[in-house]
Amino acid sequence: MQPIMTAAEINRFLETDFPQIHTDGRVFTVTAVEPGAVTMTFDPSERHLRPGGTVSGPAMFALADVCAYAAVLAHIGPVALAVTTSLNINFLRLPKPQPIICRCRILKLGKRLAVIDALLSQDGGPEPIAQATATYSIPPRG
Image (cartoon, rainbow, N blue to C red; front, side, top):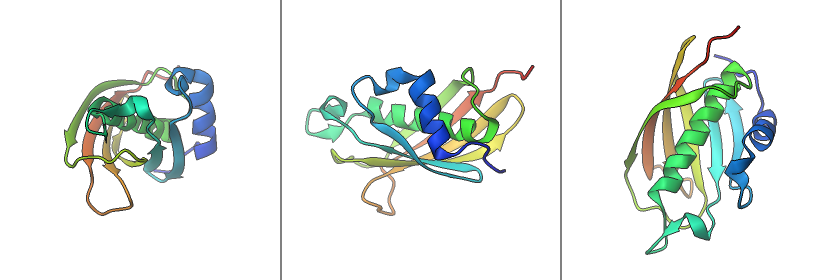
């Protein structure tokens, strides 16, 4: 499946249609778009950390969700009303207080639903810090 939006177009769409995700500064950036996949970087700030100095679970959940949304957009176009219907996340390793890379791969892209696998990692290491599966509802085109 070929993408129809570039990383720059998705970043611009998120900036204009969902500026609330950048309320405290830009922390989510789409860095790559490929057939069936999107990669996003999350640069956590102090507010994304939990006691002990690790990135919080809700911040990693948000990264998986925003990146999965970007993967759907990349392949169907700028559809603001595509919404998450489910997201399950597995926290696998303790994240360091530094940037996290999320790579979302589309497992299924139908007319009404998309299923996405997300792997979150740090330091370019081979071991993921979290894994998520998201399902998005795609509104009817009309």
